[in-house]
Length: 341
Image 1 (tube, rainbow, N blue to C red):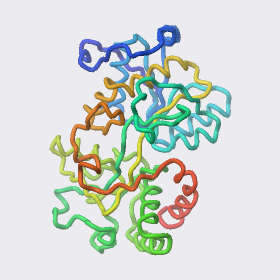
Image 2 (image 1 turned 30 degrees about the vertical axis):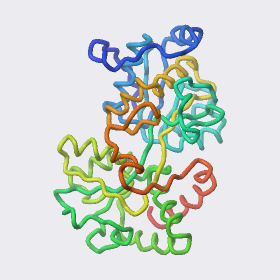
Image 3 (image 1 turned 90 degrees about the vertical axis):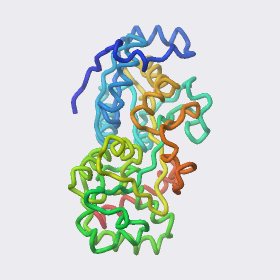
Image 4 (image 1 turned 90 degrees about the horizontal axis):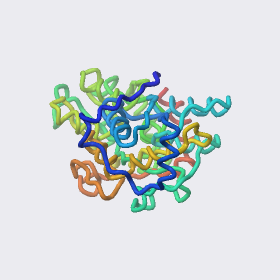
């Protein structure tokens, strides 16, 4: 992973900048004194990280350095830094990164004014995490390789002989990957029936792709896999809008989740980190996310397409919260390692 310095290009991002938020002037001044912030992120750099960084720099004149990787990369790096007493990262994001970071004593709460009107389920009461956008990982097909009528519509359809050796998913841990798929199956079918189903699915020889969901989707678009599981529906919608041969496929139940963001305990630049987090959660920051195809968590900002939300898109989402994930992740992970690795 490379540490990248986002370059402020205010003239190109004038429409993306937002007015100064209702922040304490003391915090803004302290953040400017720190002069920089280090963001450990799981998001796609060119699609959204760089635009957010450039807009923030244009607004506050604070340099944003970012390190990108999958969730395991981000969490491992922070845990290692914490153990060594050489913390570099200031803020983190990821679907379930909070769980590991909290257990390592690396999370710290604060009040983000921009999240005042967020739904209760989209922010931690102690301010240790906030939802920066919502996620509904689903299946997707390459439309040049799979006809619409041949797309799987049920979980049983995934067991068809034509799919053996032709399905891919990320090997990244977390609720948005295979672990969440397994949890969704067990929640939907029950432990005994779900386990029996997963044993059959394992015989399909699903490829474990060692990268994030965006890369998995790109490999499907390139024709390496006709069918992929647990890719983000907003990524697929964005690629389809640009002409890619990809189509979202919703199964009977799909994982519902959120990508969260939070402050690192012991952050070298805590004030700049708080300011950047609040910027991302604000209407201006959330609009940048929407323009990149993401589903906003801020209720004041609409998704680009209502089809990406279950309540308006006609699909069912099984929301797996932190408490359930914490309780069951070891069990789900053990099944993944036994059957699919």
